[in-house]
Image 1 (cartoon, rainbow, N blue to C red):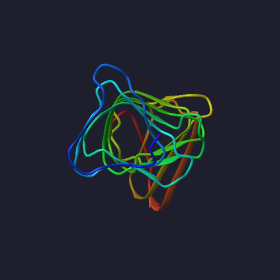
Image 2 (cartoon, rainbow, N blue to C red; image 1 turned 135 degrees about the horizontal axis):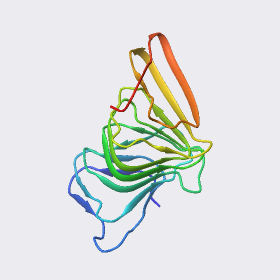
Image 3 (cartoon, helix red, strand yellow; image 1 turned 45 degrees about the vertical axis):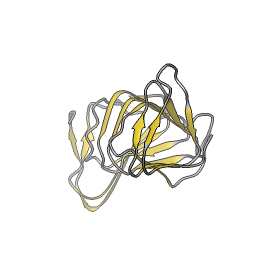
Image 4 (tube, rainbow, N blue to C red; image 1 turned 180 degrees about the vertical axis):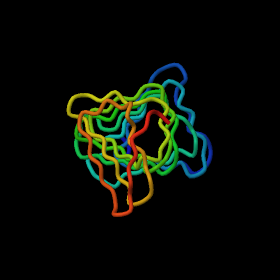
Amino acid sequence: MVSTVTLTAGTLNTNAAVNQAILIGGSWFNNGGTFTTNFSSTVFKSTNPGQSIKTRGYPFRGVWIGSNTTGGYYTMLDSMTVSTITINASNTLELAGLSMAVSSFTNNGTLVIRGTETITRMPFQIVGATVIYNAASGTPVVMSTFAYQNLVINGGANTTFTIIGDR
């Protein structure tokens, strides 16, 4: 397991023949290189808040937020494309108003959104999962097609949340 990955130039290419898990104990910053995921999964295993994910548009195959860990809090710094993503119990992923193109999405932890994101697949919410809408202002939307287990809505004084279908 590595603490933080910072890709600044060149290519990080996983083995095309096998699923090699990439274990990350901190943040992922793609600041200028090429990431080729092939069949590999990326497991974010931090037990601390304040971690970040910056992809620069390079897709992931499988992502796990937390794996036998608790307390990890990851915030996206740009939009993400991923085949499958799972947020495990007692871990958090914040989309921060950014879009996520995803084929399979499971939430067993906490998903924090602003209500301005485009998410291509609604998350399957495991019993005990939480979705938090955080928006300081504006007119964010609450997705009526999500099957919520626990729903928290936090808005500023000038925020009006509107319930709509998929975006």
